[in-house]
Image (tube, rainbow, N blue to C red):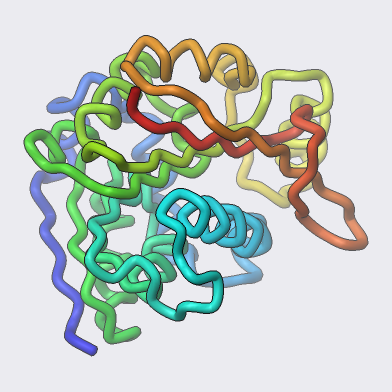
Length: 256
């Protein structure tokens, strides 16, 4: 293993102003959680519970797309991966363990600092950059993951276009986001935020995207959605993949 590296491209003020897709209040909100991000019982506890489901979906998608051996320990060796909206690296680090050359990008410099420190402790080589799609201009990635991020940006259309521009030919883009339904409003905002399971003010239900809306954004950026799966939650058993898209969903897209 090699030591982690981090590229913090901007200060907080410049980062928030340089990319029009970034909402400064969102960066501040998530940056305030940076120190607690890796605590499985802290403010990001739900993300810790959700991460195995995300990873399972991503692993199945890359195995299918590149015809990898499902038992391979480092199937992404030789591939470049981007984790957009990486937070403190909860998903970024597993992508590195799968062999990818990984870049993590987040709008909150505090998250990038926490992610960089944790990668060093984990002896993982990850490049971290503070900013939005502006800091990946000119870069190409074989795999782009963007988990629960698009509902927090100022301009989803421009954001998706930025991701599409960074996707290498033959690459794979995987996003997840809550669906804008009565169930998501009840479960995520009324219950989860209301009971403190998720920090209050994390979500704006009006910014949630339906699968049809996300597909249209992808199509407008020259991408095609090839798979969509729902994520369900039960208090007794936790998160699981499902065909029901009403709460949250994952979507895989490729270039045309």
